[in-house]
Amino acid sequence: MKLVLDLDGTVYGPSGKVRDAVVRRLKRTLTTLSNSGETLDKCISRLGSKYGTKSLTMMICLETGSNQESVVEATYVPEFKACEGIALRPGIRELLGLGVTTEILTNAPEAWARYVLTYYGIADRVSKICGLGTGFLYQKPEDAEVFQQIEGGDIVYVDDIFANCVEAHKLGWNAFWFPEEDSYHLGEGLGDTRDRSIKRIHTAIEAMRSGG
Image (cartoon, rainbow, N blue to C red):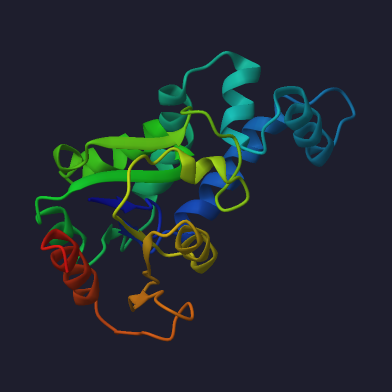
């Protein structure tokens, strides 16, 4: 059994302002990589086709020869530090304390995931990070290969994006939608079973651990 967590919006939040600010900064960087007379959209389309990715971060890394760490340090980290009210989401630290093998599944760069986990002092609770650089180039659930990075069965999956939970549910994972305020279990009927508490995730883990 293992616990698989999405990163942005699930481990910490609210993440919307961070994501929007990072995208703006990434686009400003891409503007400097555009050809003469080329619009930003055309630049993104050109680099996306050239490298086979929709990730702005990967476009910058591949076009400039930079590593993830340097791009994350220059784009993600400043925006994260500038946003107020960003915190580890309630209940996440307790989930990580249950002694279950835990992995992070994110379409963000691995370097960003490492930074966030280290920032909140929980890096030692995570055994593996599956992010950009581990073989997939698109966002989940758009690319099924994202979910194929996770091996084994008896998986409890937690994500703040409903569509991701639906895809995980199709794979037979015990998926939980964890939006900003509530936690919903995607059981039979994809949402018929609801509990407005993260306690349901604890219950599922304990039941699987005991073979129930």
